[in-house]
Image (tube, rainbow, N blue to C red; front, side, top):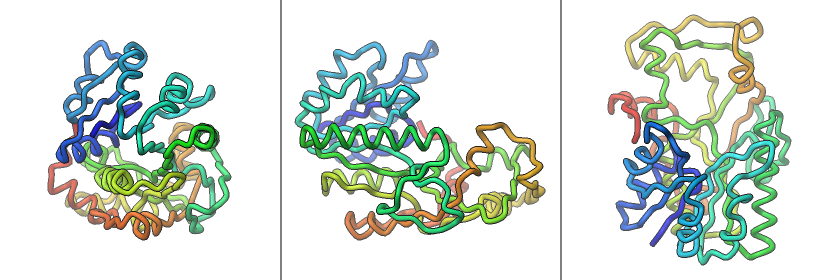
Length: 292
């Protein structure tokens, strides 16, 4: 069995390791890097790297014999790059599973209310609007060609090398308080668990929220991480007066609790890390080492 990943980033690496252990062959695209870091990172996860842009012919050859295709390259103002460069090839591919990694940002701000996959898409940020447009474009291609498209709306991703411990230890962690702010999260290993379950049980047209069971205020997560390290909890900062970059501030533009019942009911998934407490404890026990 063969998986092709267009945009082989952090989350794709966890799926690669899981599928390679099951006997799959994985090819992943990466950008050229003068230091060779992109191809080396893809290879370290167990996938064969291909440059994109650069090796489009080889990428098309892999798509022509893929059993599954994972779309994880983010869209921009000009749309989805994978759709632009490889839409025709994907439409003609024999793959029985096509997965698109989107974001729960498509739901916008719900002032802390719960949302599931049936909720209206009302993004509040530029990134959210781009994801809504990309989802619609992939759905249109799938409808036109009968493609087995599955959409995964990911919550805030954390995992090895992406936990809060380094900033806490260095004293650079900031505990920003915005009343009523709540985020949903997902450990990267659980993303891979959900994707693998979907590949094993395709349901073309399905949309899944991918998040854990416990949406929580960001300051609570940071405080818990500090206590796990045996270090002082960082001082509270008022969001209204905190000095932040526009990008950092934009993450506080949305507050919602994302429901994950569908991945359990339809895919039979039992999350390995059902809340941030379990996930952070595991990261600390493992030394919070970066993933390849």
